Length: 329
Ligand code: SF4
Image (tube, rainbow, N blue to C red):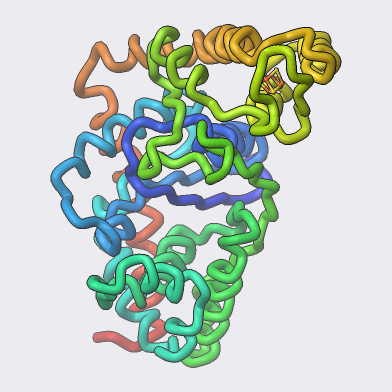
């Protein structure tokens, strides 16, 4: 791992089986980053608690998500994959960092305002402190690089400020100011063609679905709303199915759809069937690998346990330095 450029940290909530939006927006990038960086990928279950009504599915969702990550190409032999709460040092660092953060700053963050708007009945303390916990996640593992999309950029900037405040207040050079690796995260629309793909909106296409299930979901995709009849010419530029063709179909097929749609030479049913066929072909190796990994029910937990042990080693060292800098006896 020594020839790698630096250490990357990224976390994702345990949302269970992953969908195309997760794949194109995060997992694909996670897999690619492994070639250049020493990577730490964390399943942030404590973060999830801030917005969860029920924790009933937490364990199962963690297992399903990890299976998807591994099947998609995350390599636990080199990359640390673990569950946030399995390394409790993060909660201690969170508490310590919370002393150098002003409350007003936290309640001013746009993401807090948005969450408070979405769950006015449950504006809990954890929700306010979420960015501090995120800063603790990054700094505990001394990650120099954090891949973020535009919407997460204020959180990373916040984490950088926290590091500066901590190092200044305790006259130490213990925590590393993480650098932002701006990542272009494509906005993947759901089958409704309007909103971001999301499980909660039930507009998603699961990576691990069967080929038949995938076809069924694809057939529900909303196309060019102006195209009412098979004989109407369509406009691929406003059609989500076409956006997906551009990612999963061959260049000549994309070109064919682009031309034929505009002159009503292809119907939406055939166009969707072609996309579903290409998507299923693309996901076939992933699904085969996933099924193989799932044969051993202990495999995922073994990977997460080993990941937590490796993460803990780094965390313990950081906390020795942090406690000493703060002057804790
Ligand atoms: Fe969309 Fe394809 Fe229908 Fe054109 S033919 S509107 S690209 S689904």
